[in-house]
Length: 256
Picture 1 (cartoon, helix red, strand yellow):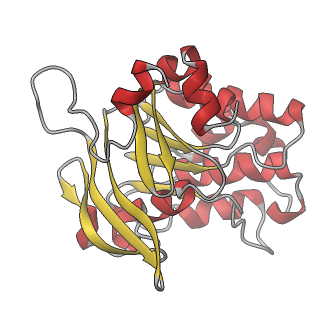
Picture 2 (cartoon, rainbow, N blue to C red):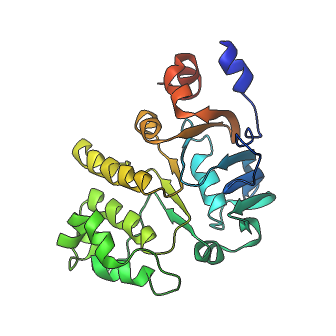
């Protein structure tokens, strides 16, 4: 085992932000979450800087989606212990709708496009509650394919187009932290490239993002930093480039 791996594995507390030690924009502190009696998230801690993209990586069953759902206060898994802070707001004390109101926007793996509604109706529905995020004109500028499909029922579009709509719907509300769960899942390579283009645009706009993605290489090339989970625990917290450069680390925890 290399020295680099030995110094990073099994650390359940993220390294502090570099610099002055100021309060981080987002922080998960010692999260413990359960599905019923199943102990899924086991002491996860990490921080995210404002405007940063953090990749949340690990093998299947490592606890990636569960950690993301815990952050979003999605109800399951149930947070039993720990704190979640976003821009000074205690998310761990909130219900999911309250977390959404203060700027947590989750794009789930199954997208959850509302059947029977057009693309534009799905977007307008997301803007019913205040505060709102991007206006429709801005959304259509960044998602021209959605502009072309605005009158089409959302669930009749291709998987890639539905993924675009799911991301756009999150941006239609005020977003301080965007949570993306497997945005490339089940998409053809040409559509993955289109989603990558959109996520690159989001990165350039400085939107703080946590990305769960089984395609670790694609996620690492997009992300600034990454953490790796193993059996619900943090085993690595560092830069995306550190993982790209460390073959032993990738083989041990990501099998790539």
